[in-house]
Length: 197
Image (cartoon, rainbow, N blue to C red; front, side):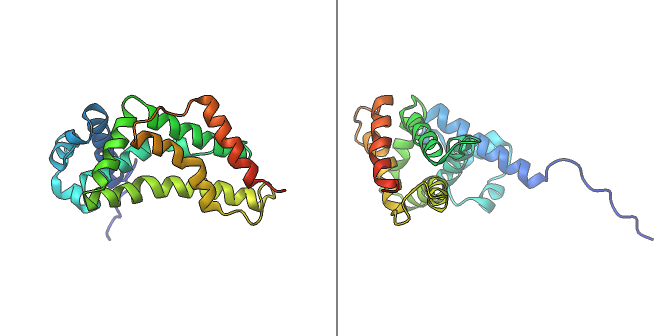
C-alpha cells in the first residue's frame, strides 16, 4: 500500500518565485530606472535562473510593469464603501500621485519613451499597466451605470480617456502636474457629462 505524501504547507513554490522576481524587478527599477533592469540583474537579485524568468515573462519590461502594478495594486482598488464617484476619484488621485512621484514618475515616463521604439516594451506597457488600470475604472463606471448613478448611454471609453489622459499628457511632455484643485475641477467637469440628466 502506498502512503500518500502529506500536503505541503504554505504557498506553492511557483508563487514564491514569481513574487521574488517581481519584487526584484521593481526594486531595481525604482532604485536605478529602467536602465538598471535586465533579465540578468533580475535573476541575480531574485536568486533564480534566467530560464525560470523566461518561462513566465517575455522581457524585463514586462516584469517591471507587472511588478509595479502589483506594488501599487491599492491604487486601482476602490475604497470599501465608496460610491462610484468616490471610487473614480480614488483612482484618479492615486494615478496622479504615481505619475508625479519623484521615483515612479520618471520610471513610467522612461517606459513610455522606450515603448515608441521597442515592441516588447510597448506590449508590456499595454498588457501589464494600461489595460489592467483601464479595466479597473471601466468596471467602476459600468457598475455606476447599472446602479443608475450614471447615464445609461455613457461612452465609458471616452469617459476613461477624459479622466485619466491629462496626467499622462503632462508627464510625457514635462508639463507641471495637476494639483489637487485641478484634479477636483477635472473630475467635476467630466462627472457632469457622465451623470444622468
